[in-house]
Structure formats: C-alpha cells, structure tokens
Length: 235
Ligand code: C5P
Image 1 (cartoon, protein in one colour):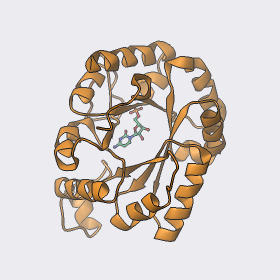
Image 2: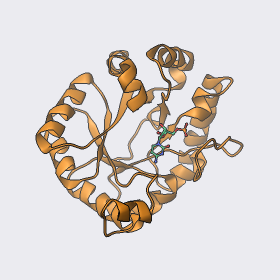
Image 3: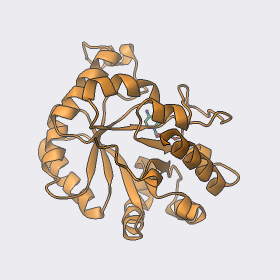
Image 4: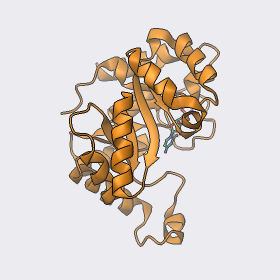
C-alpha cells in the first residue's frame, strides 16, 4: 500500500495568500508544525514558483496545484519543468491524454501526479452544458479508474467521496482531501466538510487545510491541533 506516509506529511497547508511575502511569513510562523505546502494558481502568478523552489531546497514538500491540461507535448514538457523545481505533488485534469502525457514525463523523478476528476463547482447541469453525457458521479468514477490505469499516483476529492473512490481505484492510490474542518471550525465557503479524524477514517491519505490554519489567531497552534487529530486517527 502507498499508505506508508510520515505522519507530518499527511497535513498539507494551503498557502492561499496573495503575495510571496505573506506566504513566507506564514511558513516561518508555522516552523516545524507544517512540512507540506500547497501553492495554487493565485500565488503561482505572484512569484510562487520561486517560493516553491526555496521551500523544496529548505527540505519542505511542495504541492503545486496547477491543474495542467493542454496538448500532450506541452503537458509533458511543463511536467518535466515542475519535476525539476523539486515539487512533490502536481495536479493535472483527469483527461486520459493529459494524464498519460504527464505520467510519461516523470522518468525517475520523485514528483507524484494527482488527478482532478470533476471540479467540485460542477453539477450535472454544468457537465451537460459543457457537452458531457455523463453526470458527476459517473464521470468522477470513470476518471478515477482512468487515472489509475494511466499510472497517476493519486486523486484530489472531497472526503465525502473518498470511500467510494477507494472502492474504484483500490488501495494503492493516494486520496488527497480538501474541505477539512475541526468539529468547532468555521466552514467559510466550504459546504461539504469533514473533520480530520473522519477524513482519515474514510480513507484519505493527505488532508489539505487552508484557512483553519492560515486565518487562525495562532496558526502554529491550529496546525498542531489538526496534526494531533490526524495522528490520533491513525493510532
Ligand atoms: O481554506 P480551505 O481549507 O477551505 O482551503 C482548501 C484548499 O483546498 C483551497 O486551496 C482550495 O482551493 C482547495 N480545494 C477545495 N476544494 C476542491 C479542490 C481544492 O477547497 N474541490
């Protein structure tokens, strides 16, 4: 099973902050309370790739949430660039051609690919409007199986979908779940949330947590509290 993951690497802190300066200040504040950071589109276009390199050099792990989707040649070459940055995770859209191209570009790098099956902002009507015949549930399951068949390492999905996806993809793929809130946490704009303990019990391998840590009065204490809940759930 792929589940042999260091406990401190199960928590991924989403650095959803507008500037590299704010992101670096957050990384400094968290110190050894966080080891794995997600950098998304906003921060990437605000200097986040240089930050990703610095974090990797400093021994932190980096999840670049760039959701690649382009013609195979472009996907392959961009994936190789991300591998050279020293990133640990990269997202790609779960189109078979895109996934195969990204997978083929990894050669012997430690970079792992995560598939985004269907964006959680989409419902069945949005898929129909975009020309798809399948509904969300069917398309998520189909793309999960296609990701596994393409040799993709994991899938980003809500914790509510984790158990169902585990049945589709088997024990070896990583399930990475955002939408995590501790029992007393503020939901912000997340509608479907799970506690860290329940997400782990549902089969999640890594939890992505943003605002509950980055907007906390004491981010370090918040990260430590979530980490303790994850560690207890694994015990
Ligand atoms: O602040 P919060 O913990 O809600 O942040 C969750 C992170 O996970 C954000 O970076 C968000 O973009 C990401 N995410 C999500 N829902 C998805 C996919 C990714 O919240 N379906």
